[in-house]
Image (cartoon, rainbow, N blue to C red; front, side):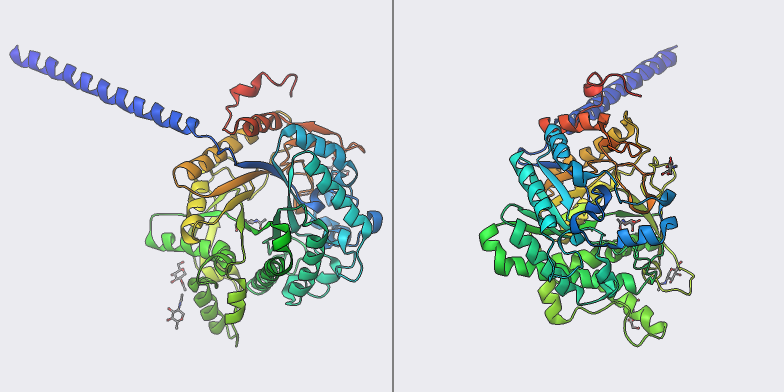
Length: 513
Ligand SMILES: *[C@@H]1O[C@H](CO)[C@@H](O)[C@H](O)[C@H]1NC(C)=O
Ligand SMILES: *[C@@H]1O[C@H](CO)[C@@H](O)[C@H](O)[C@H]1NC(C)=O
Ligand SMILES: *[C@@H]1O[C@H](CO)[C@@H](O)[C@H](O)[C@H]1NC(C)=O
Ligand SMILES: *[C@@H]1O[C@H](CO)[C@@H](O)[C@H](O)[C@H]1NC(C)=O
């Protein structure tokens, strides 16, 4: 009897104890949730949207524009582009920019990131022939943005190299650094009085080591390293040009945009943990170290691995070019901010790549994959993986002495739905992670741009993958724009500088699909 009573008493004590624990943990959980909700973006934080010239402008041969590699290859090899599509008309932003700036104004963005088409300014790539209509076009656009309180953030070049320069080897040609400096001088001279944020390059060597993207050079482990190397020198040249001749008068900032994919170990094994760090060093460090690290050169692990592998393969010189001491000095420190393009995460395993062909993956001795559990988008490479956001931002902060950061691209692809709830959910998760980076990790993030303003020509995916906050009807000669639900949502985010819940805007929209 007494034993029974004791047991009952014990049980109720346990129950009671459990209740307290559960209540406490519930309390902690809700406190945590609300502390995240409480985080807001700082008052001076800048919100924007991003685009690039070839993807939206059209007007591919209008008013004296010259031929870029995308003009050339979409015509020459249409089969390389989904549904044989091209950017000849695209969103026709070239003609519709005035009404599009009204859309930007309505959205309430603080800045608009766009790229300039090199061949609209310099039709043959070189500085001896300047196209006045091209200058006028971007002048009008920049003036109109500023009149509407939208700061222009200008990418000097994003993928659409003049074909004339590609014929000379494109970014494998070290003289590109000089041609690029000439082009940049013209942009600073004509637009630098009004443009205060410049991105020299969107650092991207696609097409140099693969056969998927223009210019289809397909020399992995050689041409992609060369492209990266020449881009580093070109970027540095333009930074020094600004310092020497423009900065005092124009007082702008110069940065570079980097593809900041997070690489997470595929397992807890020491091999995979080391492999993930190696992947970061090969993919991000190779670009950021020379510019942002006080050591100012390629990461040691990259240098040694490629040197060793090259020797073993019988090359007399490393496939990874050397930054000579004065070149390393010239490149180091050439930034006022870094632009990070953040979309997704890859898992990494150490893996011997069995191929006769050289490649970055083989040099790094890694393979990448994604978790099948992560939600898909309409782009093969893009799965929803917000956990990587804080990690990549923290990695950059710690490794590179806390640079000023703009998130220059972040976005989600679907098939063009107007009621694009999945895009909103993606952006919510990523923006929450960014808020945590700002408030908990103290990462110095100044601004953020959604990729993209409009549904666009998405390179080799043509018009299949839609990233826009605004739908564009590509079957309509007028290319009619329709705001998606995400546009209303983002408008509220910008206005209130916080991550807005989906429920809060549900009533704003009627009659959606
Ligand atoms: C391919 O292009 C044609 C004509 O330009 C268009 O009618 C068709 O809808 C496109 N197909 C897809 C799957 O986008
Ligand atoms: C960014 O990096 C990832 C991983 O290496 C790659 O899959 C993706 O194609 C890259 N994006 C661009 C635009 O270079
Ligand atoms: C490269 O080779 C050197 C000399 O053989 C060796 O000491 C070093 O550990 C190797 N480095 C890497 C990263 O494999
Ligand atoms: C490459 O990875 C394999 C495991 O797949 C490992 O056995 C080998 O030692 C690694 N090689 C180098 C050079 O890191």
